[in-house]
Amino acid sequence: MSVQSGTATTGRGYSAVDISSREFWDATAEERERTFARLRAEDPVSWQRPIENAVAPDPDDPGYWAVVTHADITAVSTANDVFVSGQGVLFDALPPEFLEMTQSFMAMDNPRHNELRKIVQKAFTPKQIRRIDDQVEQAAREVVDSFAAEPSGEIEFVEGCAARLPLRMFAAMFGVPEHLQEETASAAQEIVSWADPEHLAGRDPAQVQLEAAQKLHTIAAEIIAERRENPTEDLFTGLIQAEVDGRQLTDAEIGAFFVLLSVAGNDTTKHTSTLTIKHFTENPDQREWLAADLDERIGTAVEEFIRYATPVMTFRRTAVADTELGGRPIRAGEKVVMFYPSGNRDAAVFDSPGAFDLSRSPNPHVGFGGGGTHFCLGNQLAKTMLRALFREILTRIPDIHVTAEPELLGTNFIRGVKRQQVAFTPE
Image (cartoon, rainbow, N blue to C red; front, side):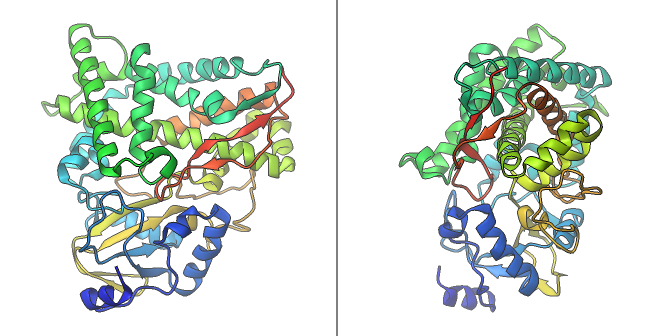
């Protein structure tokens, strides 16, 4: 869409600083940050043309408001009565049926959001949490066991390590049988890779996402039927049995939560851990600082792992009332997109924001969102997995380092790594 049509439709022109182009999203994180810094300084709430690499391009899409400062991201995140999620959390205006299938309560508003979230939280009993913590430590140890003694001292880190721990934990938590685990992981990857040309291989992005979501619902239905017959201590059984005020989750709601967690439960840990190995390579002093007192420092360090990587880059809200943000008038019905990497480099909040500083405290990053009702439910699990994995890595193969630049996933949603070669002294 041209600037002229955007102006005619909305009465305003698009920002001179364009962050909707494929070229912008194909750039490195460092190159994008230079553009975000300019926006934070000159146009912190800017009107942008429609995103180029959309799942389902809409010829009538007028554009969106780009929110790039930490303060404005927090304001949007916490004003849940004005900026809603029920119309979708991606750039695209996707069909309600697809949102229902894939995004569970993440794309819902109150009161239904809180109702479903309460039921889901009921499944995370103290016993379930203790069980998960024990499983994380064992799984992290076994994942590193699988490659630490590799004679060549070289692996491709994403498939060889980073993807394995969250997949194992997700499968263990939900009770996904072994024969369905790879299919589950593959379908979850399809959902977040719609804009990556290599991954799509000429296929239609919307069709790829729909087929992947249907596949995950089919897997969920198979496991739900099995758990109704044979309850266990896994999360699927907990979700089936959870009840609040006489209300239980339907099979479709459980399936949607399964889709949401299959994506969210895998990507944050996988890509944060992969990028952190790169950041260690570039900042050996920080690795040494952490290793010198690992048990005391790992909790603080993990927060910086997440801030610096910021694997989830964007989420959208939709204004349901006329309002104002950063001095700009926002009209009801307009899309507002939060850019978390920019918020996590905001010098108004973080000293030396471009530095990888594992001692940074406090660290109010927006890697799990800017607060409010949609703050990430799985944030503690993601941090538990990162602590366990890096405790194993730094005590067993502490000199691990990247040997080539990572190959990144081409998308405006996840800062993902497809492949990253690493080397280390075998255990």
